[in-house]
Length: 298
Ligand SMILES: [Mg+2]
Image 1 (cartoon, rainbow, N blue to C red):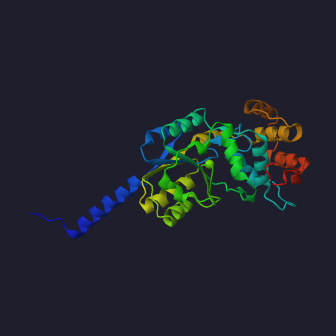
Image 2 (image 1 turned 30 degrees about the horizontal axis):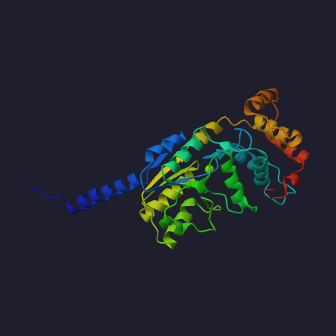
Image 3 (image 1 turned 45 degrees about the vertical axis):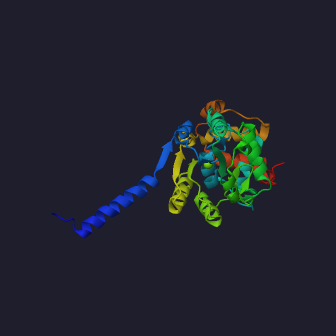
């Protein structure tokens, strides 16, 4: 009889354990939100990121993730003692009505709630924090932004045993607020603090770093997790046009008008050859940087 040498056995065992871990921490990539229906199972808790997963601005160019990244690098912040790009993003959020990211988003959330699935929001905003700025009432503002598109997490059924982790520092009306703490770190902290370990979590976010953070934390705690990286917005943002964004920003600031993407793109054609970074700073300076203050939601 042939025996397998001990070191070979150890190696095979390690490979097996490693492959188990790999299966557990697989990140699923989707481009349509309806795909998450495949992961509905009794006792599962669904956690949906808010910005660019459930709701976003009614335009691709102005105020989206690509614009934020571009504006942050290019905005002239001399003589400004606040975060100008965050302040503009708050200004846009107050001015422009958010919409569901996809036409099917609202229906999906409502149908999960009707099936008695626990479905909650999980945002990187804070209860009183917008990006890195302290702003009172971000929680109520977020709740009403979602309500305006027909999503209301207060309608979700929450099992009794889950209520122990709904710490009011981080939870309000069906939504967790991680307040810039990596989402996985906050979940780890809440679950360990209350020694509560749910049967299974499905987490959906458009930011890969957040998906990886939740996936790692829950895998570490031995909580089964389906980690979903939602890429609808990222694909849409590949069409980001900074000149069209300037057209939209200028119309909003000086004429109080919202120009749709298509019209902005046509106007942008006529402005080809302008330097968008310079144009952005001219628009913001002419409007007056301090007019993006104060940070409030009234
Ligand atoms: Mg997001």
